Picture 1: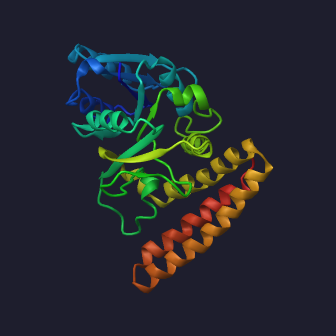
Picture 2 (picture 1 turned 30 degrees about the horizontal axis):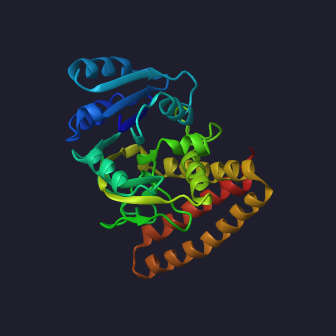
Length: 302
C-alpha cells in the first residue's frame, strides 16, 4: 500500500459524503491507496453514510473505525495506528480533493525522498461570500493556504494546515503521534496539535515542504465567520500555544510570550497599512484577533 488517506470525522453528515466522493474519484490507482475513516463518536448519520459509501464503491480499500476517546488527536492517532501505507495523508471531513490529489502527493514523495512531510494548497469554498474584514493574514483561521506555484520549504516556524497534509509513515515511529492534550475535542475549538508535531520535525532538522499541486477545496461555513466564533477560536489558539509550550518547559513558554509580543509589532504595521489604504474593517480585525490570541496565551488558566 502506497498511500493511506485518513479522514477523522465528528458530526459532519452534511459534508462527509462530498469529501468521500472526492476520494473515490481520484485518478490514482485504486489498489495503491486506502481510505481510513475514523468516526470519533458521531451522533448523526455518519455510520450510515460510511456503510453506503462502502457499498457504492466495493473496489476501494475503504476501512471504517470508531474511536471512542473523544478528540481529534485521538482520532488521528487511531488512523495512524490502523494505516498500512508508506505515506500517510490527512484530509478534513469538509475538504474536497481535486481529482489528481493523490497522484500529486505520490509523485512528490517519490521525487523528493529526503522530505519527511508536506502540505498542499487549500482553497476556500465559501458558504457565503468572503467577509470584508477577511485578509490574507487571517486566512489560516479558515484553513486556507496558498504559497504559489513553486515547491518550497516551510520555514520561520510556519507549517502546513491539517486539512491537507502528508507524512512518511516512519515519521510517527521516530517522533511520536499527535499530542492528545492538544486538538479539538467534540465541538470545542482547542488546537495546537499540528503545530506541536511539525515543530518536533522542524526542530529535529527534518524538511517539511509545500506541495502546490496537491489541492483541495475546504468548506468555510457561515458560522465560522461570526465575530463570536473568531473570538473563541483566537482565544483557544493562544491557550493551545500555552499548553504546548508549557509541556516542553519554562524556557519555551517564555519564548512563546516573547514571540507574541513581536507579533503585536507586526500586527500594528499591518493595521497601519490597511488603515491608510481605507481598508478599515481589515485593519480592525487584525487588532481584535491579536488581542484575543494574547488573552488566551497570557491569561488562560491551564
